[in-house]
Length: 286
Image (cartoon, rainbow, N blue to C red):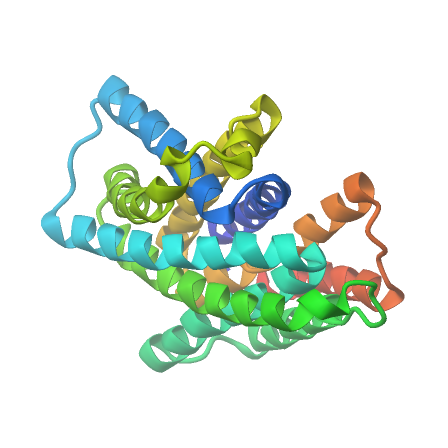
């Protein structure tokens, strides 16, 4: 297995998991859709500065169109996801979204490129089991919010799965400008949806404009973009299913941060799931 796929895929998972945590915390303080608008606007600005400063060559129209399409799916998924994180336990909803996110590109890769070796398949199975174990959180105190949160997490997973496919096709000839095109479409969607909220002077707008909330939203956008680029590099280095499965282990990072910083309870099954995730990475990387 190409070591670059493993390195970039695992790095993407760690960065995405951190982005989801910071974005989820920000969405607890302000409307999720406004958080996405600020997160993606700030990351778009940084990407444009980067592209102009390095004089990055513009890629073909095919890559840009795929970038725009992935941005549409990703922005809708992220709005649902941040809202899901703000409604229930961050670990549960992140794990459900992660499972669905991984399934879509993995199944597509199986149909298009065939299945990998037996050891990698065992790693895929172990990774799937690890996400399921991480998702199992019985007896929480916020059961009333869980059904809606789970539905939003499922919708987010579908959006993210389509995003991963789109980023794969967009990265054929480069990663920077396709990522910029993805951010342009997501900024338009999130900005248009949040404009009525932002133009009104109310309590939600006041909370959104607090320095701590803004800082978390900007950090989430930067980290999410960095994770996207790492994932695109992983797909360029090796198989789509391997890159997608490794990257989709990001809920482990979200759960650990929620446990360490928000004192959310981590069950034994979740801990077992995170240990299995490490074993899955080892098997998939062989």
